[in-house]
Length: 291
Image 1 (tube, helix red, strand yellow):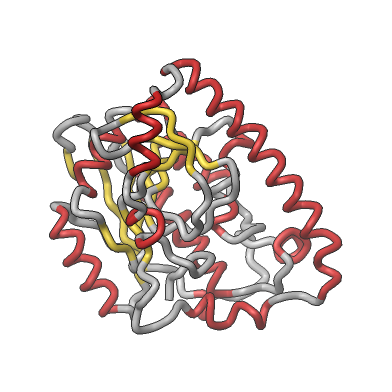
Image 2 (cartoon, rainbow, N blue to C red):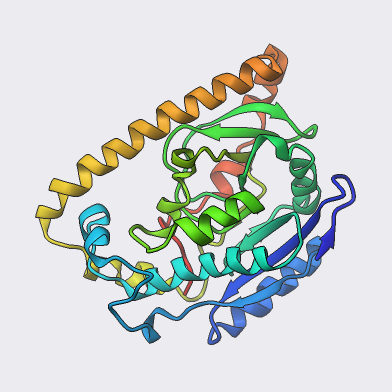
């Protein structure tokens, strides 16, 4: 557990890593040490070793809503994130930083998450990475270089994020059985009244140039159902996108009123910031990337 200086918050750090991915583990622990953090390794659930049917996975909903046959690596990834939330709830830390094992950190990563936790009243899930380049709408400045922001459209990936205990309880107890990929499921926090925010510009990314590509992405085409899947998947996705836009727009509007619309100078400063964090620190590979 880490006691953060500015926020005085207690932070647990969890690193999801397969037993066979020793190179990734060592690289991540080294990168974390360079930021001033250490992590508890959570042995990732190896989808290849899972047996189905499983009470933690609904194949019918997964096919109808996600459009895929049972994908064991994706199920293992999902359940590994849930395990992190469960482990966090067993302790007494205030927040948990959950990491996949292919993350790159900005130089000010530790200071940024500490600054963001100083404003934890405005979020339950704080996203630190994304594999999309969708627009983020800032609503509050947390440091001279970074702000809290809201995304109105879907953001993929779950490489690095922070949760409070309320969000952990939702993930551990209400996101099972699995019906969607994890990065889709935990992006639906608005349905339960939870609040998600981004650090903007982002302060970490998932490495797009790993020696070994994610097994999830290598095999994913093999699990896609025939074209009839669009009869159920597309309407469901349209419902999710519409709901997300409405709910998060309302939250963004509330914050704009609460904190005042960002000054013209702040807006210009945010737009003028070099897009290293969005363009160079963004991964173009969709989905979770655990090997």
